[in-house]
Amino acid sequence: ADLVIRQNDVRKGSKILEAAWKAEPHPDIAELYTHARPGDAVLDRLNRARKLQELKRNHAESSMAVARAALDAQDFATARREAEAAIRMDRREGAYLLLADIEEAETGDQGKVRQLLSKAVRAPRDPAWVA
Image 1 (cartoon, helix red, strand yellow):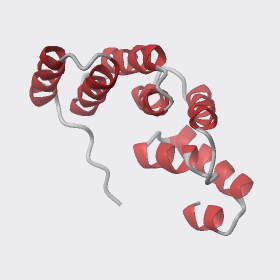
Image 2 (cartoon, rainbow, N blue to C red):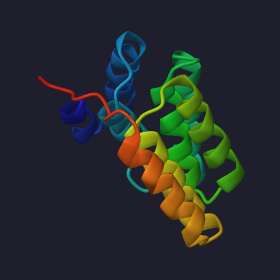
Image 3 (cartoon, rainbow, N blue to C red):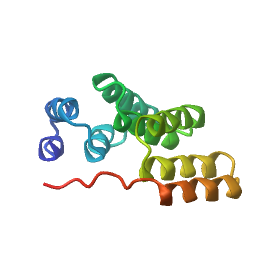
Image 4 (cartoon, helix red, strand yellow):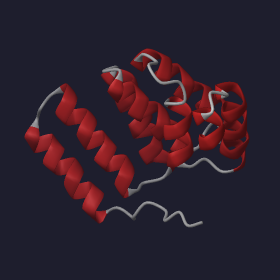
């Protein structure tokens, strides 16, 4: 899919990524999909992340993808809501780290950031993806 996108066939590459996402959501798929069109505004990337979420609802990785894109767009309410939803679905290290990033960007409250980092250390590790 990456090669297809780099050859300027964003539509075909996006379809490949959407099919892969439906089969098994993965953070690398979300990253490639949301950044498929160079020069897209952060709100466009957020909308692309939401499209992925529609393809695989109630999955922690879908919420994480939207939360990351929302953080980039400085839509802190959406970022926080989706990161917290990801934690409810799958308490894991990456979700707490993302929530700590959101807290730091939005409020700068170092006490809350440290609390979230502490939870991240104690949470189960993110799945290891192997080829």
